[in-house]
Image (tube, rainbow, N blue to C red):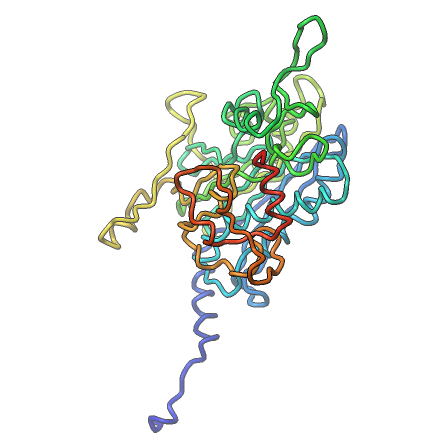
Length: 417
């Protein structure tokens, strides 16, 4: 036995390594595949697995999937594919544990989307793109989206969940009202003589979408602020489909899942694209990514049972995280067989997306712009709560987080001020 002053201790780094190794055992297996048929060459994808949250440890891994459906050219889609991920990572504070890192994702995604749009518009190019960006860390799936590409989930229990928002003006009255209030106009294409045709569009420019990255020529009220949803799957896993509007204009969500039931992801993605273009031929770029999130002991595609109550019925309510349960056992047993909603927010206002009541509000660096991450000299930062929109939740203008002058101008333009 060693003297007290010479006793051996395990280094903290080793303890953390063991904890992370234990955590890895509980993580799911991720299998993915993609397929695409190109008409205009404006769809692009990003697929990255085994990304490291803690560089070099080989354990704290997560996966990233992105789909970018360009319009008016491919420049915005290519730029977003190359820069959006890094912009998101720069907005996540360093030295966070896993739970803090996951909690920081929704706010970092907003920062990354806005910075990507701001930087691209400074290049003077006029194309635009939708963006659907998915981060999978363990059983937690975080999705940020602008535009009309879609990310949907079918759990192993057979329920279907929408993880992205619909930003087509035709079917989103709140977005139509926001654009009009910000100085834009919404209407159909006028062919003369009072005849209007086609879907609702934003004028000037004629874009059918209310949110995108790029589109410098249309107006800042077409915002890059994403809808974000974060959910936790049950340990049985599930299947994600991320696809451009070339798929969803032809297939319902339920049909997309049914047509590839039991197939591995690569085959499933090809089958979905085939089903989408078969009736009318290739009318648009049609791209699909399929991702299976499975327990390690079940390395086969999820075999969710068809819904007993017929087609067209989708799960719209999530199991809520019970934060008031007094018993740890109760929390552990709370609806473990359903998808659990952790976060959801779709506001276009940065003051609401950077609200101080956000769980990791104290992680913002005081003298760094919350959007572009540029250093701000003391006294030069502008609170995101300054010149608020009148929302009752707005904070005092001297409360952070802060924006640099350039990003404050971007924010005011997006809000029509």
